Length: 244
Image (tube, rainbow, N blue to C red):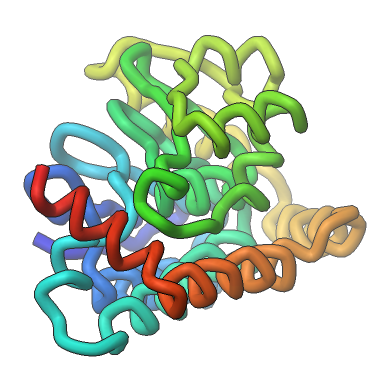
């Protein structure tokens, strides 16, 4: 249980927090560390970010927040998410997200910052933050869906299937769940077959021309989560979630 790093020319970072991959605050830091270690290895040419279990990621562990006195767990989760999302984006080699089942909240932050997304047929993407009394990762959802759909998903908390993202071109390929990891490895091997010096420089160049500073944009969103928590709306929403 936790985050596993399998090193190699194509490294694999695997999320495993049963039962639904709701990642605790320490898990986000662990995930960031694994991604950073994979990218720092000069022999790594691509990284696959995948998950075990029922879904890719259900976001933060809200139950951890509600059973922890004070704001320590909330602050740790917010900083942990920012660090993990940044580690995906700043990884010096391309990151391929292999998404199955649900990709919610923090999962969207990870997939949205990945260079490529390969999805299983059962994959759905969503931001239930409004129902949880929080805001965040619209920055990353905007990299996956068009602007009006992003706003609809934030306001309504609706999920969108991977096939829609495939139509938008933000999901590269949709495969049967049993074939997901193999499909991710295939595109990773294609990238790994290129000159690694050129690919690493291409990643740096592409990040440099992004129109939105994803780190700053996400931290701006998180400021409203802190405000919601201070005025009580965040805590009420998290209590309702735990009571369900």
